[in-house]
Image 1: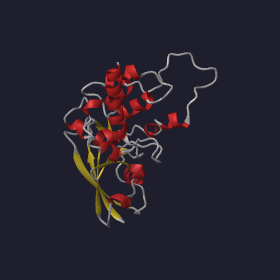
Image 2: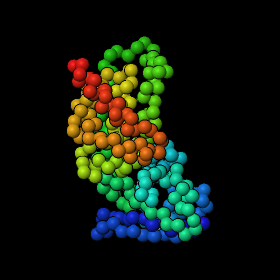
Image 3: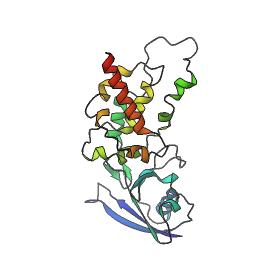
Length: 238
């Protein structure tokens, strides 16, 4: 089928502002949109810039806005976003980030916030002789948020950032929850300093857009609310 791929392009070094550029392409309905973009770059316009890596929905590199929704290009089929021959597919970079070039956004602000919640195991006790033991129930308590691939789709989808760029963000709270819920971890007090703030977990208004956008189906909003509950219970008991 014939499709028109309309891409919002921008090179801060040379362009006065973002502009739309359209490319005509031929694709099968079951082709992945990432392959369409690669075809445009290889055979039509080598200056087109976007991120990609594994191409199998594991690395999260190719997150972008496709027809107004945050998706991974490698997991989006042409038939998912183009109903008929001649359909237009609009592609834009993720929202709430500065554009580095075309569909590539600067991720520094995200990873600065990510590091602030110390997303790793904190335990100052001497390790056991063999390994830490967890029951299936203990492991299952934080199983879902471990599927996060840091694609930034939830950040782009979250409406809180429209008015509050200081919000710590959904994926980061979910990752903090993952370690706070880990029976081996003792870093709750440390993460509390970042989470228990107006721009921390309390800025979330339960729009559920992060959960809808997550390509891994993570229940992001649930873990944000569970974190709020953890903090409230902690403050009641201390």
